[in-house]
Amino acid sequence: MPVLADNDGHLTMDTIDLRSDTVTWPTPAMREAMANAPVGDDVYGEDPTINQLEAEAAAMLGKEAALFVSSGTMGNLTAVLTHCGRGQEMILGDLAHIFRYEAGSAAAFGGIQPHTLPVQPDGTLKLEDIQAAIRGENEHFPRTKLICLENTQGSVGGVPITPEYTAQVGQIARDNNLKLHIDGARIFNAAAALNVPVQELVAPADSVSFCLSKGLCAPVGSILVGSKDFIYEARRTRKALGGGMRQAGVVAAAGLIALREMTTRLADDHANACALAEGLAKIPHIEIDPSRVRSNMILFRFAESLPISIEELVTRLKNDYNIVMGGYANGRTEIRLVTHYWITRDRVDHVIHAMRELLT
Image 1 (tube, rainbow, N blue to C red):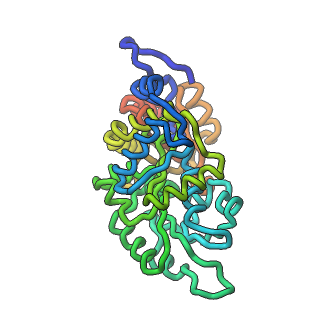
Image 2 (spheres, rainbow, N blue to C red; image 1 turned 60 degrees about the horizontal axis):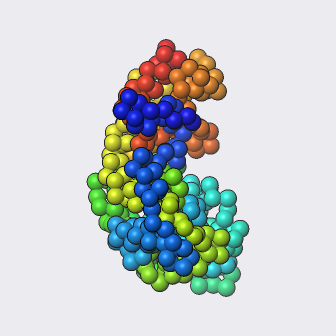
Image 3 (cartoon, rainbow, N blue to C red; image 1 turned 90 degrees about the vertical axis):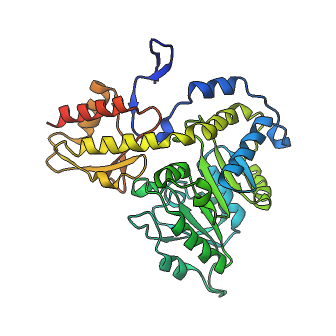
């Protein structure tokens, strides 16, 4: 996408991209920090910017230590491989990102068996389902080692999972000598949506991964946090996966801006998502319940009365209005739109105007 400059010289995007918050560009402050970042060799533990990022991330989430990884998938895979051995089992949702969108990596690289449970409309797994899924000690069974939650739960529209529920799952894990991992790709969105400290959301977890490169706008990278002993082992796992980095402070500098500045403004993205959903609800041929919007994701359907095909609508939005609309979610039954730093309120209004013109 081309970069334009407004009259004040600030960088802007000329395309309204609603496909995901993964499309976010680094902010001007991030670009400056990256250009001036002090660096060293991270494999030797000598990159000061990486070390600072990991220290601040661990402190923010109330954990002892942290590890910078290249992506959310690497963060989750590193956690799962560190917690589980070959032939062991993890319990997770049937709509979980780890299960559906990470290329079967836990099975492919770790020989770890997923035991999937139905994700509920509120993003949770039923506690009784989790309890029933835990294997007894029997030579016929794989040994259960790990429970994985996702917060926010993207498959049902970015629903935040409450600290009370997470505490209950954490208690089940402790009672059964299991570990709890949270795929917290958007954990700061969950904290903003629930108006609770992020430390409270992840307190029961043995490990948490979160993305710097989604709504927090950094160009690349995720963080894995946990105890010092866990991160020591996870660092070895990351190395085995080819994730050892050298002068990575160049990208970690953007991550520091993400933690310090971008985590405090996510409520704006949520408000814009609500405004967009409410505007779409007034347009014919769109089936949407604005009350389902809990963070920065919107799920909706087109009615059978839609006067043009979805493909034509998407094409015209792009060609005539410079709007890129997301793809299908949940087996092609719903459309997903995601707001982020670069989707301002005036751009929300532009999207509503364009949809109204095309559908009325």
